[in-house]
Image (cartoon, rainbow, N blue to C red; front, side):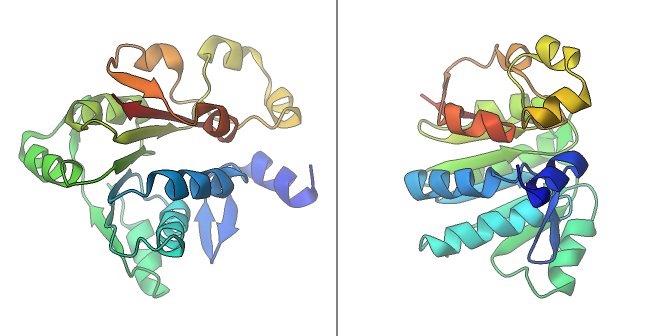
Length: 211
């Protein structure tokens, strides 16, 4: 590992175009391959946070000629939206500061809004990276159509094994130091298969495609 990579893994973020990106340092490379492969027509992100990943995804979409693909990002806090707008980087990013969930379900008044976005022609990519990844995952999977992709961050396949590791063990092995979604907690979501999972698991994402 180099010093910059070590620092990212220890503190849990790296800078991207002036934004804090709370991701594994290799995540942009894997997202680039994903977007190139599936060429999404819609992207929905749950958890704008400091907007680093939001901006990376927008830039990757543009890089692959997908300027017309809408990117809608939801967060209950305004900081990410404010950072993007302050720095003039919000073009092509629709940040919505609101809660759309009632635990493992969408709020009834938000169901049609989300359904309409997901059901657009082409592949919809859903990124669950808010305050309760497995709840967001459970709430949104029923709305996906065949071929759509849903992902959850802070993933490690086996929570029991993860909990046995010390932070130093994780660091030495390049493992992300957070685990908020794992296989057992999403095992009941039938009708989905792993997609690019060998590439995404090392950067702490679960990635599934709707059959």
